Length: 233
Image 1 (cartoon, helix red, strand yellow):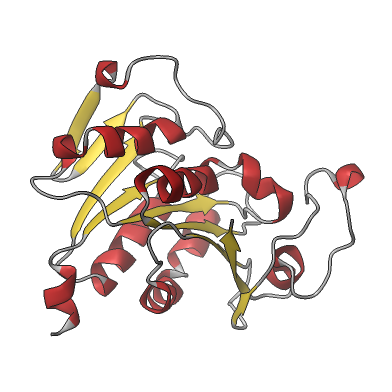
Image 2 (cartoon, one colour):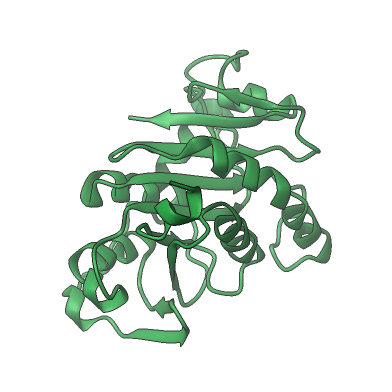
């Protein structure tokens, strides 16, 4: 059975916390379609950027959310990132004609999510919730940037440059049900791929470091120019 035939029975959910117009979202959607040919791809995003809110949820019943269909299989919701996963699980028939979601992809986030910072990332948080609540394989994608704002033209070019590498990573991963993976692309042209442990320190809060950066950990390897892949437990 060829890959297209197998993928025809897969429902994929694509989410982000940067909103529907984020270039990382369109780049990831393109890569998914190249790798999972024939799969059903549904995109659900917040109406605007809501980064670093993986632990936040909206205090409202799920059925009260205003879900807007922007185009075929694309939706926006005025909700927190984690809310999108709960909606996709509780009301999958709202988005799918049959079945449930089998794989969830999140990103590509504008900015890296490595070390202890993964645990307050909206991008990674959605993938973790999907793996636990939906029981799907889930992968979060982020890109280390040297431009602070995602609308900066140079930043857009940097994200677009990883398209080919995204396809290669997607082809090789194929996450198992209940498995959550965190992928980060370096600021430069990747030197390769490293499977890494999550560093027990924060890049943004150095006074909270619990250990030095070390080879074999995501922060170190990302700074050395490698694509890092970490399994989150």
